[in-house]
Length: 436
Image (cartoon, rainbow, N blue to C red; front, side):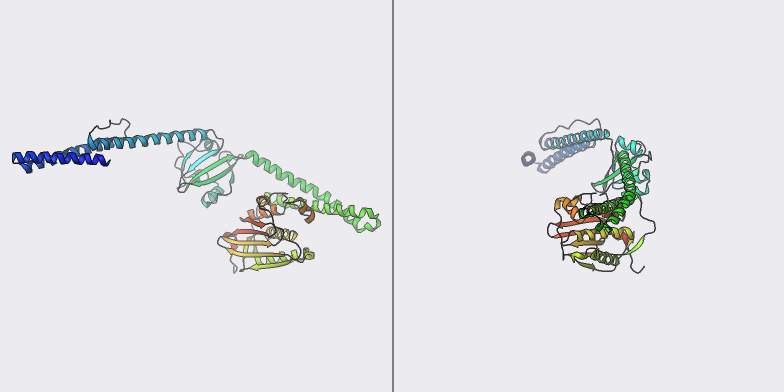
């Protein structure tokens, strides 16, 4: 490029020199210099006009041919043409990729919907027309909330909390259950994936009904069996000594079965029933102190130290019985897995986004690989633990469901030999003014 400019400058200087020599010989130096400069400027403006004209028609379907020129203008035309061709090739490449992406997404049974930063529909595949009823000719650039009018979808879409999917009936067929999952990308744009989970939903309902019905049916016979076993133990002295241990073991296992049935019924109720419309004003400090005292009495033989820490007075809006169940489950678990003379702390602290209720202990702790699965039903870190503590394996599942119903999350931090911390994060919307 520098060589081209030098060549053009040399041409201009030669033109001026020739004009000067002729002007001196003819005695008209000024006139010939003016004519030389004017001719050079005229040539330059003509080439600029050709460049402008070519660029002006560049976007038309039938483009004019590339202007031909020599010197620096020829290089400029060639350079712009190469850039334009490179851009066109890149655009065609991207267009081919986009076409392939659209063709592949059209074959998906899952609906794929692109929503811009204004909340308007940009693009969707064929499955979206089938599952959501979108119309290709009419609905483009329409606000998605005008087409999906379910209030829960409004709250989910505008809330911006897309960690968990949303399940809703299809606007096309109320018997079809859809799962909505939204992902943010670009500058506020959203990618919405929608899939049909009707069969999974039916299986989940069947599972809940089965567990609820079986648990309910087992409750009566287990109660009867435990009643008779208790009566037999009250008169175990009248039996041969070899029957004492079997009767005690049957009674322990019967009680364990009763506890499992009770917890299964609790889980079924939490899954199938919504929170009561009339919620309680739960005094967090009083709740922690009551549970700490109860745990101290139940596990009096371990001589634990129970400490309640509060950095203020707090009221939560929720179900007192459910919150009591969740916090007591965490506290009793801490007591079960903390050796004698250990310390258990029940703490409530104001967090930037709400209130944190924490149950901490200095017990045996939990290895990291087990933590993600602790809230699964019947998941065991160690089978020997359940035998020693008599746990049902459902306590943390109950805690998780209670917190989900209250819009809260459970965080578990633990290290083997250094104890565990179970933190319940409640949002600020659950906090009530103390003086109200």
